[in-house]
Every structure is written in C-alpha cells, then in structure tokens.
Image (cartoon, rainbow, N blue to C red; front, side, top):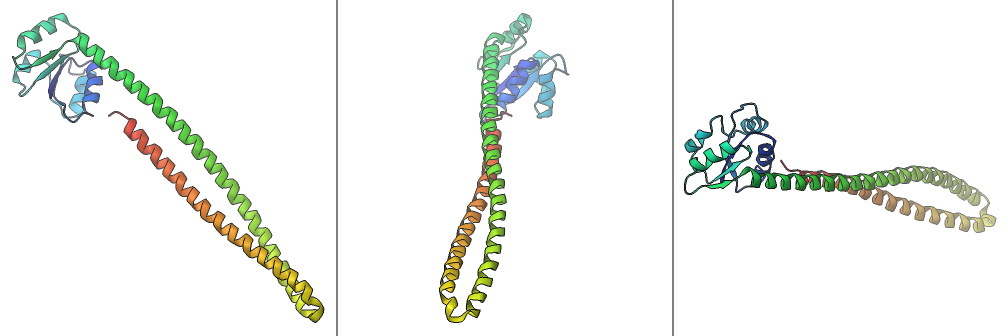
Length: 218
C-alpha cells in the first residue's frame, strides 16, 4: 500500500511512526504548506519526500491511498478533485479515529512495558540481594571450615602421638574430617547454584531489554 499523508501536524506524526513499523505500507510523501511542521520534519529525517503544494499529489507515482489529517474543508474538497479513479481517500475524521486508536494502543503498550519492567526489576533486585547474602554466608562458612580443618589436623597429630590410647580419639577425628568433606561438597554445590543464579539474573536483564524493544513502536 502506497500512502500519501496530507497535513504535517501531530496526527501525521503518529501515522508516520506507526506506518514505519508495518512492512506492507510505504509512505510516498507528506504534504504541508509549513515546511517546519512536525510531520514534515520527521518525514525528511526518514528520507520520505515532502511537498508544500497539495497539487503535487498528481506528481507522486503509484499512490493508492491518500490520508487527509488537516481537518481543513477546503483542503478536503481540493483533494477529492485531485483523486484518481484507483485512489482511496481517508478523511480527517476517519484519520482522527485511527490516530486516537494508535495512541491508545501505544499508551497501553507503554503501561504494560512499565509494569513488566517493574516486576523484572523487583525480581532481579530480590535475586541480587539473595545472591549477596549467600556469598557473605559462604565466606563465613569457609572461614569456619578452615578453622575446623586446622583443629582436626592438630587432633590427628595428637592422636598419633598418644599411640594405642589415641586410637579411639582418632576415630572421632576421622568422623569430623568426613563431616568437613561433606560440608565442602555442599559448598561446591552452593557455589554452582550461585553461578547459575548469576547467569539467570543476566538472562532476566537481557529478556527485559528484548521485551522493551518488542513493545516499543518506532
């Protein structure tokens, strides 16, 4: 669909931005007597042809739809006279309904994006707080574990010195070392889970970014 927008006000701005996101719609030109109108400026920035004379409509090739957003009765009548048999015409009243609908959809999309973004941020914040708490706790546990290792090492040395009478104590020391080994295994598992948690946080942040991009209308 090849479209020409007559009028460069805020409503044309809404249509230009919206049509840019639709593959099958191509804006062939924007017409407004004011070369500094917001829609005209946006069109120029996008490489879309702009015209200051409404009669230029006859010079734009392959136009099948003309949308008038000026609200000017004289402009509407002139356009109707200029229309070719195969061209469709949308008046400013119909265009107003369309642009109002687009703006409402954009508002809802923005609200949804902000809501989802807030939930993501809360989740990520909670996970980061938990991650920091786990790391702090792990550090403390590792300190205690190292101290216990030293104690059991000294106890084993003393048990060996005691000879036969130290064998019973050596059994206790061995049980302590087995317990420490189990604690070390648990710590390794927690470290693995912690790394996975960090990866999950990174994925959540990336997902939020992609969601924002998908919800943003260019």
